[in-house]
Image 1 (cartoon, rainbow, N blue to C red):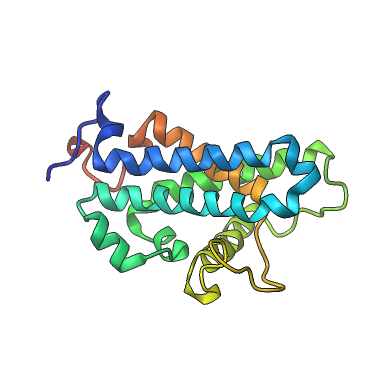
Image 2 (image 1 turned 90 degrees about the horizontal axis):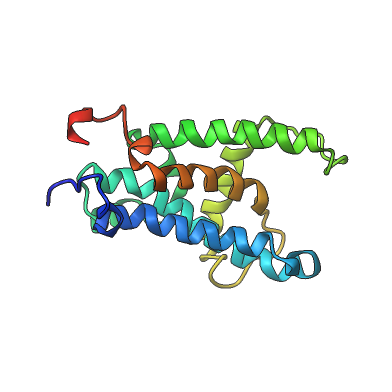
Length: 192
């Protein structure tokens, strides 16, 4: 199977479906988080929102691996739902850079907005993303018996949905609009 062309049919290809699906799940998580119901029933909506977000992040991080030539089965067998392992793959260098840039932007916006006066906004945004990714990966995996899908263990920490939706959602939207932005640099551009 050759690499799909970046044309109007890209998002219909198997590879393009990874970024298109990531967008679908990230947008759904955003709709839940920004809904009027969130203020009244956030305790009921947090886990489904994080589940949608976790799947969006997983599909985003698998996209460059699939584009680089691995099959979906190879990626699934090697990584499963281990988000932090996917995050560290060389093919995800430009996703990491985009996510961390978006994290700094949203962190500053949230801090300067005054909406969260009791938050000291520590650690720095990069640490916050790394910790949140570890938590999200843990909640998505075997260590918690797939807590986001099934039974949530008592006292298990969870990341902030709004921050992650903004940070990963921006990167996903940029990738839907220009999939090359998630890939250029680690591959010879002529291959794209």
